[in-house]
Length: 197
Image (cartoon, rainbow, N blue to C red; front, top):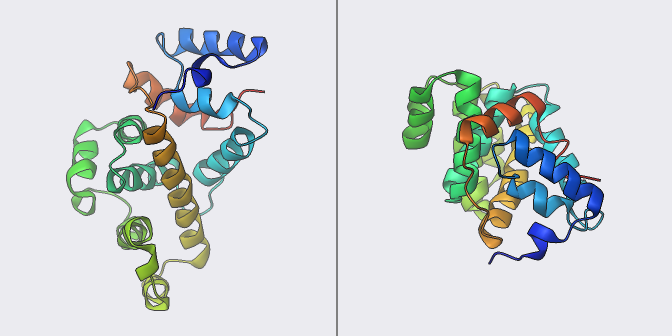
């Protein structure tokens, strides 16, 4: 359900910045920014920090890997908004629409990081049936050379996007009009500014 307060309930300073964002983004402010900027101390400030940290402050995955995990989780949750936005970031990262199509249809057949292929089935289980995860699932990753810290980073990305997918679907985020511009912006600047002070 689209709540008008999430489009219009911002401070005058936020409205000014949102207007500027609309100019940069081709006439449309990103819906997550609108949601995370409204009453930001309640939710958005912490969510934006978690999102940026999980997607960009990584030791074991690069930006492309993080965006592939985000897209993968969104596919599993059937969140059209996040699939579209983060596919655009993956396309910017890989410079290949073909790779994006492979990720959308069968990510394990795409030419992606081999460690990512090991981790994605675990992420799928965490996304769809977390109660079925066991110690063996974790040991399988560790035995195949995936470090614990890399697993933790992937879990954080999964957590962020399970949350964002539900926000997008609950608040009926409008699909972007210029996905290439969105992809370029997110790839270059990340998520730190997703909640406007």
